[in-house]
Structures are given as structure tokens and as C-alpha cells.
Length: 621
Image (cartoon, rainbow, N blue to C red):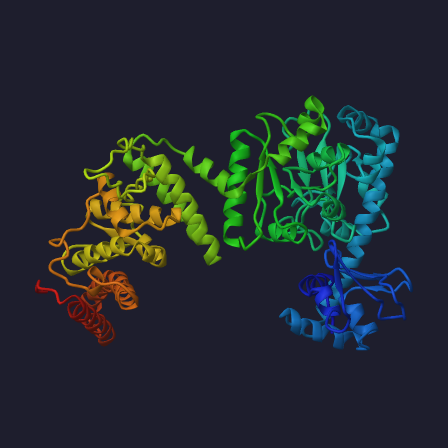
């Protein structure tokens, strides 16, 4: 049975080391690590540490050291494969079946690591030779100290099509090509990928070279890309690799943050200024896998983007990637640089403290999302404003976690309400005749957003005329009578699309009121809604429906209101499905389509019958 290094790395990442050890040893939290009395030798004071982020345990007393697999073999006494199988069950992973090809791939990757290490030695050596003089001058112009040049492994690729091949003659050309160091063009001899460039190695979390990035030095090569990265190889997947992760991990524990910048030269500039927790994606927008990797280090990484249009687009791409992944406590913060400046420019012009101040002023994801969508298009007309609301709600719908989705919808709806409607000045307080105080609480209410435009409402539930319209009027009257029930039914109300604009505006008003968290009395809510020129449902709108929640209170009224909301949501959905099924039956005329049409018809009749029973409606069908 052959297990690849990638599979084993994934296994180690999925199993919590502290949780595994904590099943048999008492562990205690100590900062970002855990401590325990060493289980491998007798001791009275804890010298055994467990680091989940690094994935290993270590005893400073006896020197015991290992990862989750080593724990299972050394402490639990399991053979290697038995340990792997047991951990795989805990991690929810399938143990690869025996595959001779996997063994060959693992051996191949081991050989490719040797190739990349040899290439790195060649590039570093070339930087120190005469042919690396231009590269050294460039590094000096950037102000990078010698320690930074050595730490990050800067090198130089000579401007030759065969220099690397000649230096690595011990390896066959096929391996150099597979490692991404040489390029094959049909009908031509292979040639070195990196030529005349300042070289920077890209390392995996274990500190092994897996790829390279090269910056062009000659100003004459205007047709060549400024930066060139290795292609995807058996060792390197740019969408899953975070540059400088192996250095940023220990630095992040001290700083309590991770700073994500746009390129690896920005990472080096931050490190030179004393900010060692910088990382970068590699030629692509931040991917879902990279976001998950960063969340293993800190719960809220800080993304640093340029202030120009391209930087703002990059920020929005990162936000849209992150929204579906959000979970409690895990998010992103966005720091925006001055227009036309990268981190190195800021540090050189204003000093490292200025960069620290920019990072400290990073904004929350919801703030940046709101500002970006608000500035994305004009807001001159009601249609423009409805478009903004639709875009914001579309972002909310991508969030998978239900609580976070609800909170984002509430937050953005509140902000939209403040923007879309100007507040009216409230009349000065006047005592009523007889000396009684006004029944209103005197707090200006945020008016409701306008209804969505026709295009933006395509995915919502339409409530037309007839019984469903009367039911809607009754439900809204009930919610005004029982304001504490609004939050319970907010998600259902947000999906409705009444044909009557006045009903649309009233629904949005109730949602905004609920989002504000104000628990108004019914005697307060109705006058305030009317004052904001929102038409309230009348008895005529309800078509004579006499629901109990329109007159009563208590648990029975609450349950009846909930059933009415459920009918309100299901009835238009069934009507749409029935219309679709009827069209299909008319086109196909099969037993299957007829059965589906009849099923939906019966369901519609059952819903209408229940509605009539509940409301004792006077209007006929």
C-alpha cells in the first residue's frame, strides 16, 4: 500500500493533535499551545508541549517529538499502517488502495524535490558571481538587508537558454521539464524557463522548494512579463499554495495576525520592515483553499490591497470567495493602501509605523462590501437604489452559515434603509389635550427600502391578486398587531414579491424595524408606519378574513399567524409550479405530466380550502 506525502499531510492537517493526545493525557491550554506532564517519562512539572498549528508535540525533558502518526505508533503502540487507518477514520478520509503507480509518483516527487533543491543552489550561486551583479544592484536599490536576501533565498537565473540544464546535468532533461524549470516547444529544443531574472524560491509548509518566481531585470525586454512563476507541477499547485506560509506561521503567533499582500516582493518588503507575518497568493486571486489555510493561523487575516480600481476589484474577488466560507469567529479584514502605492512605497515614504497604522485601521468585511457595492453604480433613481439592494441581498444568499447570513442581511438592510430614504423631521413634542403624553416614543424611525425591481425579483415568491393578496394583507395586519413576531418570520417575508408596491414597501419597513431590534408596542408601530406615509392594510384589503390573530393574543394567535405565513409562502410557489406543470402537460401529454399536474392542482385546492377554513373568507374562489 502506497501513501503519498500529500495524502499524509492532509491526514495530519485534519486530525487535532491536542484533541488526540487529550484522550489519554490531561492537557491544559497555555497561550497558543497546550501543556501536559510528559507521558513518555515520569515528571511532576509539565515539560511536554503540543502545538496544533505546527502539528507536533515535544518534550523538553526527554526529547520525545512527533506528529499524530508518531503519537499513535510510539504511545499507542500501533504499527504504522494501523495508526494511519485509525486516524483516517477519525479524519473521514479514505485510505488509498494499493497502487504501484502511487509508489512511483511518490518516488518521482522525491526526485523532483532534489531537482528543485539543486536549482535553488544554482540560482543562489549565480547571484554571487559576476553575472549576478545587476541582480545585486536591484536588491540594493530596494534596500533589502543582507539577512533578508539570505533568509528569503534570493538568486539569479543567467540570461541563457541552457545555463540551468548545464548546471543540473546530473538530472535528465525530462525531470527538469516536469519540475517546470525547462520549456518544451514543438519543433524546437527545450530551453530554460527563467532567464535573466532575479529568482525567489517558493517553499511548501515544510520549507522545501517546490517552485520559483522570477522578476525581470532588463528594461529592454518590454514584451516579457515583469513577474514569472513556475507552472503547476506535481509539487506545485498555485491555487493551494500560500507564499511564505512556513515563515509567517511562527511570526503570526507573536503578532496575532496574518497580513495578505498581492505579491511576494511585497512580503519581502514587509519582512524587511519587521513585519514577518506577511503572505501572498501566487498570481491568482485568493482561493477558498488559501483562505482555509490562513484561518488555521488566525481567525481574521488582514488583506492588504492597493487603493486603485484594480486593488478594489481584487478586494471584491476575495470577499466573494470568502462569503460562502464564513463561520462564527472567522472572517477577513481589509486594509487599503494609498492609490498608486504598494507596501514598500508606504514604508520607504512614511516609515514602518505608517504601514502599521494602515494595518491597524483595516475595515471589516461587511464594511468593505457595503462601500464597494454602494460605489459600484449611480444611485440617482429608485431603480438604481433597488439594484443596490438586490446586489447586497445576492451577496447575503451566498453565505452558507444561517446565523451569519441572517446577521449580514439585517446589517445591510439597515444600512440600505438609512441610505435610500431621507428622514423626515418629527413634529415638536406637544402634550395632548388633557395633559397626557404622546403615545409615540419620540424616536425617528428608519423608513423602509423600496421594493425590488422586476428583474431583481425574479427568484422571489410572487403574491398576486385574489386569495393570496388578501392573505398577505391579513398577515401584515397581524404582524403590525404583534410586532414581536416579525423577526420570527423575517426570512419568509424577505422572499415575498407582492404586485402592489405599497405592500412591498410595508414588508421592507417591517423587516427594517425587526432588524433594528426595537420591540415596539402595537400602539406605537402603526402610527409610526402611517407617519412614514406607508399605507396600512384595511379590512377591505383582507377581503373579510377574520383570523384569530387579528383580534386575539397569546400562543394560539401566534401559532395561527405562523400557519398563515406558511400558507402565504407555499400558495404562490404551488401556483407557479402548477402553471409550469400545465404547460409541460400540454406540450408532452403523457401520463407522467398529467399526474404531476393533478398532484399540484390537488395541493392548491387543499391550501385554498385550509385558507378559507382559517379565515372564513367571504370572497369566492
